[in-house]
Image (cartoon, rainbow, N blue to C red; front, side):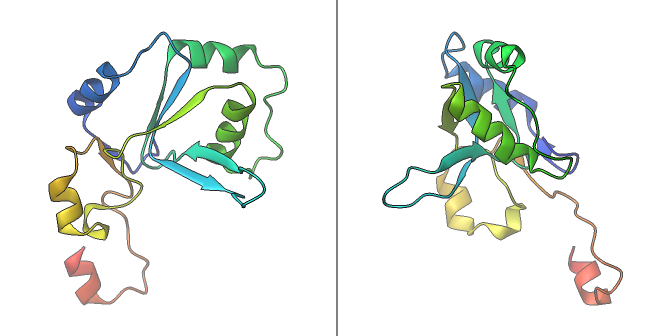
Length: 138
């Protein structure tokens, strides 16, 4: 996860227990880029919402000699998604991982969804230019 992610470890363990850890899996909230009608694009799990990798997935990544970052500023989650795609590691979307704060989801979505594993940007700091009203609301 990112350093501003709230993670429920007990709930995470429940979710992970529902997956076959003998398979190469990459679990979390799935995003994607470059999807077009003629090309499948690449899926990735957001680091903000948190992710989990099975032992076989970690082994494939550790053994990969071509898995290097393009640059220090390359997006870590998108880069990892590209590597997982190349290594045939399954991307598994879990709706309990959240890339944003609870208030950015409609209450009905959270009410009707599985119990959350994580929320990203939890306790986010507001810029100095934020009004006192916004600071109080945060």
